[in-house]
Length: 303
Image 1 (cartoon, rainbow, N blue to C red):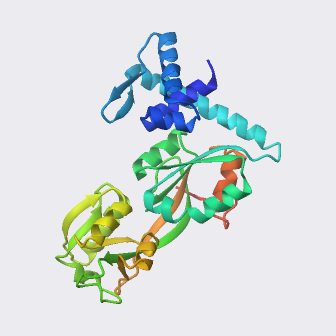
Image 2 (image 1 turned 90 degrees about the vertical axis):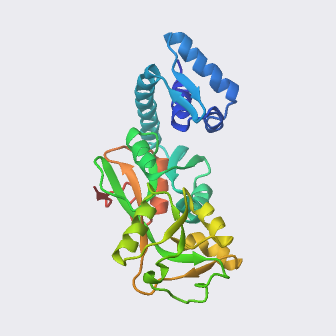
Image 3 (image 1 turned 120 degrees about the horizontal axis):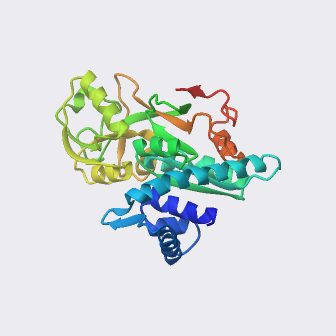
């Protein structure tokens, strides 16, 4: 059995998709299917099952995944440590974040990194915060970047940056002529929000509670791009990180209005598994995201 086969299996379980697992390993979907069938034949157990919402491990597959993930992670650590003896920075760095960070906070850093280290393959995925925590702890990810990070066992946190939260609305909306606005003025407004389990939704709800504001939710969605499209057609207003709306402001499809009564911000944090040895490629990536912090994260905040 090859390490590559175990990696394909782990990627299939992590992504729930034959096509994504194939793309991540630069093979065809039929090759992924063949490798899974080979594993199932070898062990005489069905390891995966297909469902409407993707591929899931069977009970035997869960055991196989747990051990395989550990083997793959140890192999990656071995490669990383051996690479540290040379001046070559290569391999794969697995990163996950939410859409609004990946689309609007990473572009410059990614361009610098890819230019500096062309032999590294960056695998950037978009996931919800709870899944990012889980995948960092399991070793399925090297680096996670999340909003409103919280203290968790075995997680090392590096503060990343803060984004100002602003109101967005259609240019024809009655609030659009305000240069600034108090939060209280949103009372009774039709509001487009993030889904309830998303940290930014919870933070906005805390803001509303502090200011005794009640809004009428007309939609709750899982990413900022959909929120902007709904607001653009005039269905309601929304609160989003300011960098996410800059393009629409330039195109005059949205108006951004800062809050006047206090500065609301969204904290972003880089999360890593405590005590993990990182490959040179991962260390360089962490360093390029946070140039003020040593790549080895010696000054990182432990949580």
